[in-house]
Length: 556
Ligand code: SPV
Ligand code: MG
Image 1 (cartoon, rainbow, N blue to C red):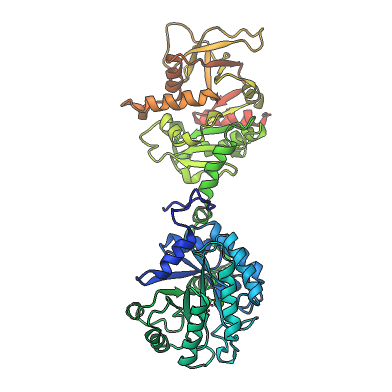
Image 2: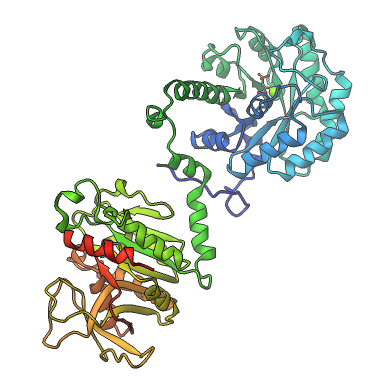
């Protein structure tokens, strides 16, 4: 999938040459160049992604997408607003179809000033009278502007522009309005002399004869632009040979959109369902991509990242869960129902209740079955052959300056999270000192600097080591890690450095969070212990499901 350019264009992001300069070069180029129509920000972005060097902001298409006629029913400021949206999301130059300039020379001056301010590279004005009508509707009944008056309008625009490369294209409608070639050439020459940067010669015939005759007589006095909407079957090579500078494909995207929307709307109406059309329309994710959603997420990381009190969560939920037989045939463990809602929903609700709204879940097995709102789901594609740390790497962009890392299969009373959020150490693990040391369950046992002294609140205890998968030590453990750890401030840097170091190991794909925590301790980075006494559980077997149901039912 292609990635989007930055959402808004600033000088810092723009390619070296200004857009005005690039439009001028495109018009002056000895090669035949092309502009494609766009009518809003989305279509402008699509034109740019298709590889076009420039955009035609068509008056017909902009009016059509507003649902009004191409008769200056949309005000000029409304048209300029649309063009600004187009400029905001693209970097290629835009030539605006400025109709007649929306009035006399004075209106033209104001138009040019506003277009320059809004990043539009040039404007095309036509020698008709305001309010105009589209050239293909009763064209021969439309009056043309007085040549002198129109030349004054061109000159006024050229005089007011501050960027020397801003382009003013003069569009000659003489052939449309039923005048002869002589009149068309006379007008075009007057417009050239008034300062027009290029001439657009328009024809409504189905053959290119008029255009070719004009081009021949014109003899390259100034760049020539054409709009072959009606003579569309003419091979492009003919235009190239005739020395045309720019071909404008003036309305194909609005027509494509209209046809696709009509077909889709009709089908949904008939079928009273959207199931059939889902795979035939752009995905919602594709719309997000075209809107530049990714850039906003990255910006949020940058600008919200260090905000006080903005704790985030990363939930590891990539496994199937071995102890559930066919219950997890079609879903991962975290989607098993507990007291009427998925296990993951319980966890997410708990996090949100404590003000943690930014929740990233790393999924793997049957990721598509994760149907819980209010979360960001990332995929560990190699989930079947890798472990927890590989999943954590997938979420490393979301390891911000304050986040909790939690297993997706745990349930806990909400005060545990509340108390953890009060801890200020760079790394704090929650250890349950109630866990029977002789438990037969596989468990992450913890050995600490001190045993839990339940008579003392907020005891400063450091973690010495944590086991993985139930392995034992000579000494009895002080408790069991509940699968919840918080990283703050410099703790994030420690974690990212540890991940980077551990990734060098051949067995990285087998490593879990306890290995990471032990790595920190091994490198002298203190890991604080927050002791709890029960009030949580994890779900590892069918038997646990019932316990979890009872736990959740009594939950708060
Ligand atoms: C437009 O695209 O609005 C044009 C070109 O002015 S045409 O519709 O061919 O007149
Ligand atoms: Mg137009």
